[in-house]
Image 1 (cartoon, rainbow, N blue to C red):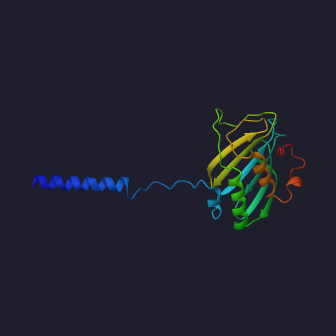
Image 2: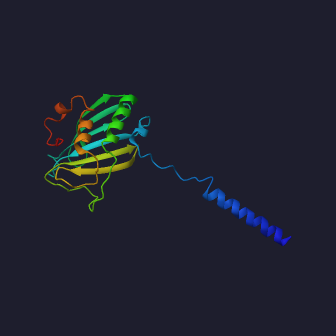
Image 3: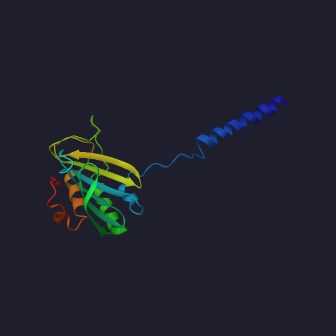
Length: 185
């Protein structure tokens, strides 16, 4: 009888190991690596052009956020996110899908390894470009590049990405004419 109970416990442990490690895993699924997979979701992509380091009063950034239903542009004053002007333009899932495919082909999610992963204060006399994939309050990915050349974690085609974002805002040039940040195209 004692051997029989030991045998049942042994079989039970084997079943438990299979359930825990092979079947029934409750770990979250990995985030898709292909941008087009986000086309039907509320996930957005964002480009921020952050101007030279200067006084809070004169510091400017331009932020373009593109999602399934709309594209937004914000001109921001200072380092605390004071929005000076905002524009919103309707979009749709088909347009967003094509945009995400274009970003994907241009290497939007490509990264580079760099010693300095913190972009604050880097390239102080130039502009920093920050690229994000955002789902709600979560940053799924954040990379950056600068006008100072060779700095940052962004590994894609910078000129193409900047142009693609700019073209999502119909009157981008008019909205940014008096802002001291511009894409270096």
